[in-house]
Length: 243
Image (cartoon, rainbow, N blue to C red):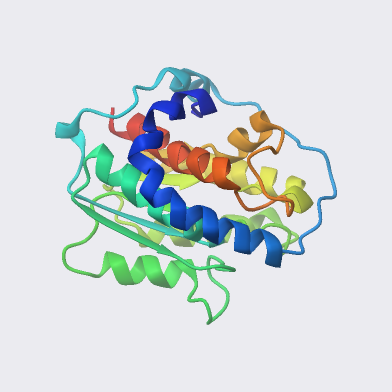
């Protein structure tokens, strides 16, 4: 499901303006972060559907693109916001909402507002976004001891998103919580298969393939190249879902 870095080269002209802000923000996050790197990269074997997605077209046919999309995420999305907005508009969405805050979790906290509350608010708005991207779970990985607790977070999020709407959920990666990320991603993947109309955005796979060269020193946040890869990971998953 991940498209490798070389396919991004022809998009650099499109994204140059958006990247200026994103790269500056990424550098600031790198300086402020203190998350240690503690373990080698692990991998999750891709499913047959993931392997097939390697041949996904650059963009889905524009007639298949809904008019509106909402993406809810944490600091990884916040760093990539300008680039993601440029990519989504290029795909053909006319209304793009990207709501992302550092340290955001799925259900816990008040500042920032948990992702579940944002999704419920957007789902109750008029008009309701007709496609969704969720990039949450990274700040929850490693904080729960039971699979049932992670599954509860996933179920609550999926329950808040209108069931007919196409959905992408971006897989989680942080170098200090690899086992927890892998478990969360497996549970999330199984839940998306059960839901239908849903695709995984393979950020974990992208980082594993890059040998971490697209991350800052903290092992969590994307660097300048990583911002491009993260945005293209979202684009590729959308193309798969809408094709």
